[in-house]
Length: 342
Image (tube, rainbow, N blue to C red; front, side, top):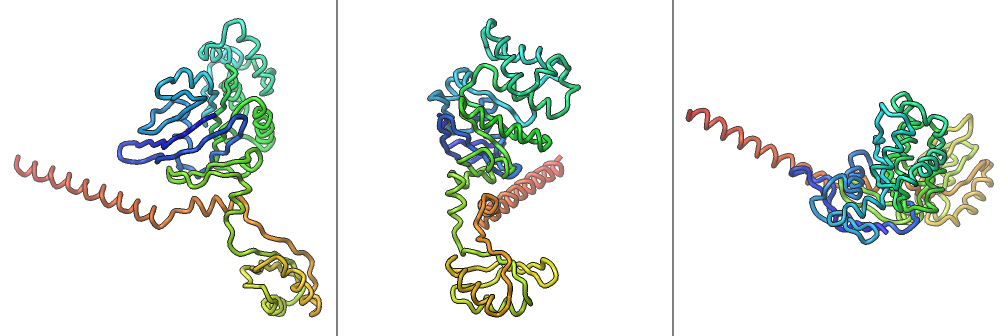
């Protein structure tokens, strides 16, 4: 298990990560989701011991990264956003070198490197210089490096950035396969990646945790009005009047032209039970209902709502900027006064 407790990181007076806490269970694939600049990479670097925290605790299998960094690192395989490869080395030579750095016993290095190359489908390029490989292949070499040493935990920071659609699908498949033997923290800002491979997510924005839950629970948590989307053949004004006259309809939020005489209506309703009387009313007035679907909140809706800057955050940012400006002005005045005295 990985436990993050009140983790905080400041760069000077600027907070990058503020008091975040979450846990990752064994054999879980946890999505660590946030917009660019949210603090994802900073958090990954602190979990792996590449960056010291300002305060807070990271426990990996009960070991504190600050007190037992070597024990923690033995249990972690890390793939940073930029793969840590030596571009002037050949693939196999680099992986053998990385296995030595990770303390893999000499008699086991050959097998581990062979297994990692097979798993990442890079055996056919093992004798090639890494710098001559495509970005996708370099990403695979970095991924293979993370698997060396048989780590219990894998930390993957934006592992699909720069890959083509086929390579992205291969990485998704690999992550699902690796979850059988590893606990995985998967950091990304691409919502489709999280939906494809994760059941539970952490959403971070502006260095703060906004939510920790399953995707299903987060989608259900938005609540609000239920909506139906109807594709209807009929004159728009007539259809609008009919729909608004049905009991249980609270309004029409969107109308889109589809083709001659056909439009789509997004209708807010108190309950999805209103579908039958609505369709009956439309058909009675010779308006053909071509399609009816319920509109449900998805992870994208949750993400947008949770990561949108709040009024409080905006005011806090403004106050920080004003404070910095005043301090700079005072420093400039002091310097001017000193020059005048001289």
